[in-house]
Length: 266
Image 1 (tube, rainbow, N blue to C red):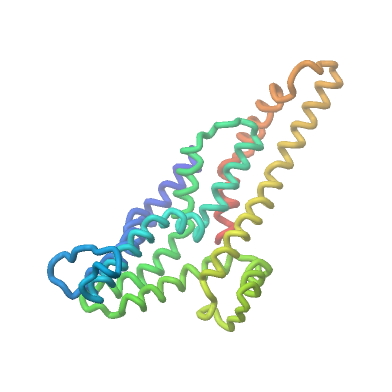
Image 2: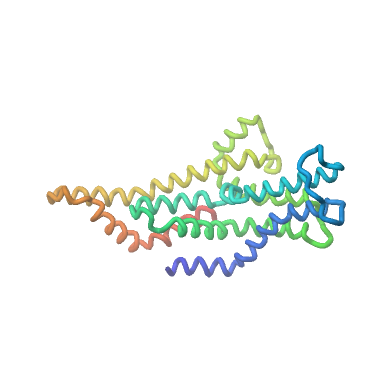
């Protein structure tokens, strides 16, 4: 509980709510651009279809609104695949499986803790996006255009993903599309995202292996002791589960695991 309290206090100190507002405002950036590009003073009628549109501007606005709705629908996938959420939730799931506690902690706790740890890890990245892209665009003077804001917002995300992507995985996707970028700015984000996801899966499974090893040793010891005592009818899990819980608690497992996850992104 003390480790969780420290994490929550750290989140509050870093103004997590303000950062979440910046992320939501970034999604609203697209809607603001659509409203500013529309030449009409009143709300235009949405016409889906080229034939029913009375002008090119009306058709363009309709397509932009449709694109906005599409982006909002895939926002959860973007949050999962371009952040630390994938690695964190898999590692926590491995811990629960290795302990053998089945549905304890519940899925809601695993997802919630993974989400808050993700915001904690992604805090510096979101701050850069807010400072370099969102704030200049949202200013009254509109110091930068919408396209420039989108371009600037990709920079911090690319830097984060590149730091946690294996070179071999990235090279595989670049060769598949016959791309040879010389700088980070030339790197296509559509090639970087799948490489990043595969690297996160690989890293989380490697960590999961190390998590399973000590618990597997406990299971083998308990099974050997029960067999040596002639208690072959007693399921080993009846004895091994309390033993694994005791070892995990004495080792302050949740704090150690959380520290290891955060250190991997430092």
